[in-house]
Amino acid sequence: MRPLSLPINPLTEPERLRQSLLPLSGEPPGPGWNLDEVADVIDPHRMVNAAVLVGLIARPTGAHVLLTRRTDSLQHHAGQVSFPGGRVDPQDRSALDAALREAWEEVAIAPAQVEPLGFLDPYATITGFRVLPLVARLPEDYRAIPNPDEVADAFEVPLAPLLAGDRLVTLSGPYRGRVRSYWEYQVGPHRIWGATAAMLVNLGRRLGAAI
Image: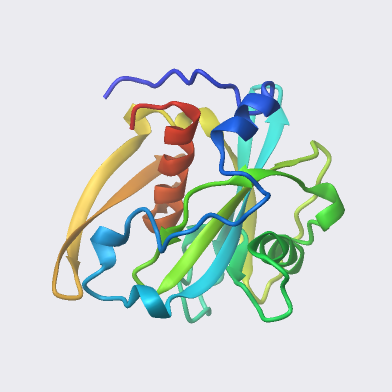
């Protein structure tokens, strides 16, 4: 696959980026753009709402994205690369508030440091979560401090390679009764797959990548 050239630079053209995302004024409807892939194992009417923070940072080499590696002791998605985030709790006023709260709890990024830009499309996980990804800008001097109870590591990777065709593969494997397809990126030592990879594909498509 050929490398992709994006028509939008997500950090030097923030207004065009906002126009490419779903607005903050209302939470996006629907159970998930990928529901067909998991509809045989989840009930779309009983999904648990969740939110994640897709944090973008301007670096001299271009935009980077913040990712975490979850601790091996967690019940769900142990050891996997993910965005900061989790379920929407009753005290959260919105998915936006949940994403900000989870970022604070997991990596100590204060809400005041986050500039929300817009939402990606809802994503349905095979474990029954309806995830709303909040795309936001983080300041260049932010400092992520992982909560050891949930996060083993917090790190950045350049965004452009994630949206390049030579870094993205489609794989498949048996899971809960049939063979299922999923995306995977390999960036240096980091294996980014499953829901996190799918949300990055969704971001790329909204930025104009032909993936």
